[in-house]
Length: 419
Image (cartoon, rainbow, N blue to C red; front, side, top):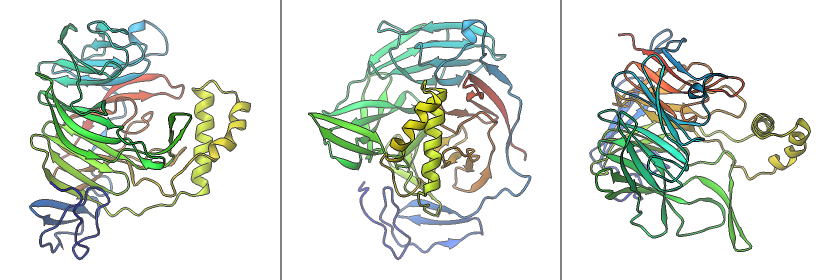
């Protein structure tokens, strides 16, 4: 498939991310909420307005069904750098801690059951635990990106399988896991073969499936990476975060990959078995300019973060503000922050939040692209992709929350969907 073919402008404005050639198209509103049409056999949905009215839609209960974490007490309940949490078939929870490289299992009431793994290079250990996923039969799979090693742990916490990720492409290195689909991980590889300078989308990203059974890699697509400011000097390449920069976001459920670039609201659904585009969801979101208010909000956020987490004094933070103001910055804001597929195939979209402002509630889109509405997350959640993100089932939401002191909690809430 040629991802660089452009859409004829007489049909629709070109998509900023992976535009497709359209066959004959004559979109007609099916309602005031949605426009649907066909693009060379691919259904394209443009969401115009949410279906839910005031007082309608889904809600998440305020009180958690399960809470794991504490300010003080037994070590098995103290959390530090949770990289993910998954729900088991019996309602229990397994979480992974990046700081210690260990896994912990709790029962459906949140009572500690076992711990395994730890920091190291031996079997069952992790140097840098960056992903935790669930497998049928209540096994879990982990990625240690420092060792490019995938490990599968059985329901009892014992190591059942361990295999290194071997990149089939010279100059490309494993970057991370997007998700699990059947007996495959959906991986990203960073493409460092070219080293441009300036404000660039680099390194590029190649997305592929990786078999848990034999380690076979199959390429799905390549996409531009995150926008960064890259300089070269003294034989070194330096990457600096480009504030308000754009980049790809993605999510996986069995058989399906959703991918978008934050330059525009155009989400593509990709079939994991064959890499084909099966649907496109669009919204006409206005591009917003970065203002001096946005810059000052970023500077104040940096000061707060470095005082709370970086060991800065108030004086050091104040002295650092001029440097933060001079950082390379984009001229426009991203149109969204992140996306997430739930167990039913609904797409949750996190709107972009200005530094220091409250994170807007995520918007939810049905599998057919219908914009349903927004669902407010319980307080203490900093967005969809804080730490290990969220796991959203048919009737629950599981993820990592933080209190005002930065203490982490793994919580599961009831998700209610009135008929």
